[in-house]
Image 1 (cartoon, rainbow, N blue to C red):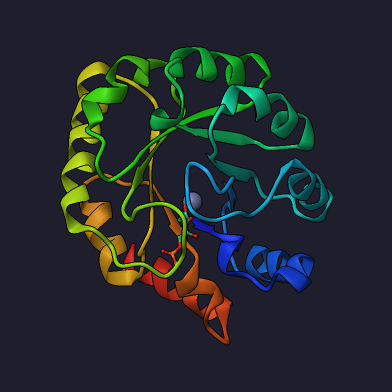
Image 2: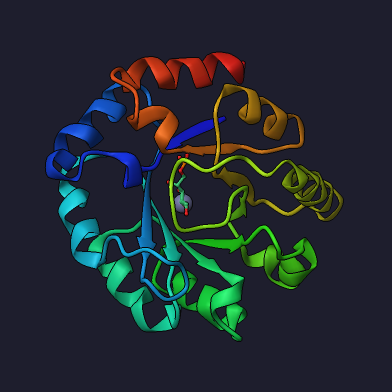
Length: 216
Ligand code: DX5
Ligand code: ZN
């Protein structure tokens, strides 16, 4: 079980402090939400922020690309120090090529599906995938409610993984709090992204502990 705080809900004026706090508090990844104002109705970070974060933490940088034309920017994010690059299947007609590109750059390969997208859309790229992200909200903003219907997708991915002896980890993102994390874990999820639950609190470390407790 891994906890990935999303810095989308962190204090951007104090990013270093916010990252160091969760690293000391037991986080496993730092989740970086890249939004372009086109694929999703919000704008956040570019490769320069990933580059700035790289030297300040030992944790893997889990970079969630919510951008059109991902192939255009994958090399820049790899160069900036992303450890995992996750691409939305909805953003490219050539998902296999995009994932091959990530692999070729020596970065862990992630693929992600929106709430409206079925698992069958990514079935044929699953063997080359290190991490599959199931969105449990519509991407774009923190603080939204968990969509329970998505749990079925985690169970489907777990079954496919066992049946085919594939190796990917299953990540969930959106509306994750102790209760929803537990539901996802039962369906086979391994990595839990949490933004507002961790950073909207006065004590983010305590929030990480609450998530870990629920998942034990
Ligand atoms: C949403 C992002 C999430 C976001 C989750 O588009 O992908 O990573 O930070 O925020 P919470 O945990 O508040 O739902
Ligand atoms: Zn995300």
